[in-house]
Length: 148
Image (cartoon, rainbow, N blue to C red; front, top):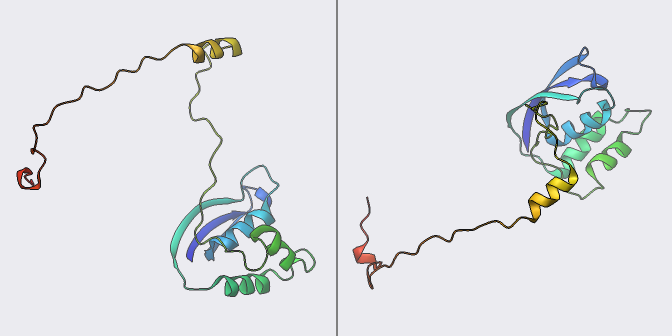
């Protein structure tokens, strides 16, 4: 399992951030679930710091002990809800969330109507087939190929 350090935004608040060190991808998923609900995504600046050899069963047990008292003793329930039932493979690496933000948008460009988009899609597209070149018989034999 890979280990990460990350900035956790408590309740999704950018004014209340703490750093966590050497947490697994499974733990990052738990932290996202615990701290979601604010205006911002709960994780920021996730950086891989190393790896650890640990079975899924041991990781579930470790997380169960660490988050046992979360929400009045519902830590094991949280682990099952977020990571699946016992026996389901845990994530071995963290994949960051894909941003829905648009970097640049031209607000001056006119919007196309649905009809214009449909008309554009209905137009035939010309496809030019590449020309084939003739290769003399035996030219591709292994003895004729020169490695550079």
